[in-house]
Structure formats: C-alpha cells, structure tokens
Image (cartoon, rainbow, N blue to C red; front, top):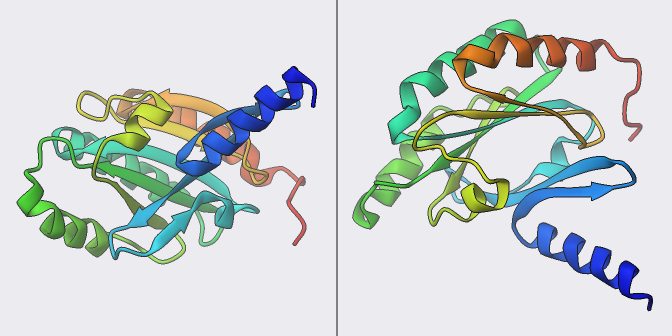
Length: 175
C-alpha cells in the first residue's frame, strides 16, 4: 500500500470508531457513533437522506440550546430535518449520569430530535467543540457532508437559511 492511501485509511477508521469529520474527495463527511439517552446505539449514518442539524450542549448551555432547538424545530416540517443534540455530561457527577440520561431521553421527539450522550467528553474532543461555553451547530446535508458550522442563538438564523437551501435541494440520497 502507498503511504498516502494508508494514512487516509487510518483516518477513516479512527473517525468511524467514535465521531468526527473526515475529508473525502473535497467534502467533509461527518461520522458519529454513540448512545442515546435510552442507552441504545446511535449512528449518524442512519440519518442519511435527511438534512441534519448536529448540536452540542451541556448543563451550562442548556438555555441557549433550548432556544436553538426550538428555532430549528419550529422552522422544520415533519421528516425534512432531524436535530441530533449531543449532551455533554461535563460538570455532572458520575452518580447522577443515569438521571441525566433519562432527562435527555425525555426530550426526544421521534423523527425530529434525538439526544446523544457524551459521558466522557470524547465527542466534544473529536468535534473540537466547547459545550460548556457555547452551543455549536453543524449543518449536514442528505449525503452526510458538513455544509456549515455555526455558533449558538446568534447564528441560528444563518443555520436555518442553510437548512432551507439544503431541504429544497433536489439532490436527495436514493435508498
């Protein structure tokens, strides 16, 4: 194997192991695997064919996350946008993680918003976000490519404009 190919292969394998953004043929494909609030396995690849708003929040940015999620969900029609919120457990003592998981799961809305938990901060590190200080919004197209990155409530309108462009796009993933 050529060293360049081997390097790309290793990057893709590492990204698939947890989550992250991998550059592939001039586009950044987003991979994320984790568990939802119910403890079930979650794989972002299962959202292919839909526009996704991937957000990162913690107990410290909960109010701003609520504003961002409400804006995204109020603007979407059923089935054309799914919000995946990664809930970082920073600052939550381990003995309360079960409670925090259940609270995250209570806010799931089938087909609209899914809460993925990040108990150890690995997803935060993989995506280079700081949910203790801000809510990051990644807009992902129907093919899983990163199309935009925005910060919190101040840029949620920009994120919504991009979501609208992607939703009305005729390019859809065939199943």
